[in-house]
Image (cartoon, rainbow over all chains, first blue to last red; front, top):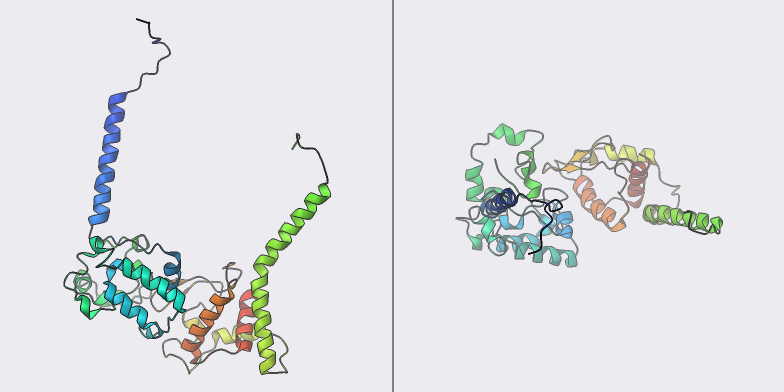
Length: 172
Length: 144
């Protein structure tokens, strides 16, 4: 047997390292679960065109907050978008519609929007997220004066209260 | 640069100057073109057109109109009165300052400028803005 060279060998503390890695992996898993399954996480818009066109006047709302039928209806009446003319050229409109529909709450985003869309009729194609039953219920304790506060101004201003809204987090 | 042979510092200087020039024009050109386009249209509409005025643009920015929507009678309904500060949309989202000095990237995309003039003039004045109005307003913002 050849003698080893104990003086030069680096002795790694294998056990603590392994335990540490295990802890990291475990918390990553838990975090991912919480992120994916948490009822207050809605993946933000990732498409730059959609973000620009749908995020100039208000936060670019996550497509998983409404069913596909709603997005189709909304994109079909952009000249009167809640009273404003938000029309875009046909090519851009197609691009945006595709993105919204494929990530809608009842298509790509179903695992995120499960609770928010509960009780919502897809055939009714609701246009306002703030009129969904679940949304109303979740915000029932917010007093009227808070909505009228000059830094809130509108129920569409999620960011005023949900600091993480742009990253997809709508916790209390 | 010790290991490089020292050759033609003039060429380098020329290249650097060219690069700088090209760079500057790349940024300035769309705004100049936009203004030139509005100037040509203004001249067609009124042969007596004698150039844009930032002062008129400033007055326009702060003026209240009756033809548009009740909740947005002026540019300043959403944009700040002082164009170097941020505005806010009716939906509560912050709008970057409209003064070029405060938002250096603005007005570089003519299609985007036209898109917003089209929407906003309609909301505020209830009609499209004239080339003169657009040019004046833009001149004010570029001067700020």
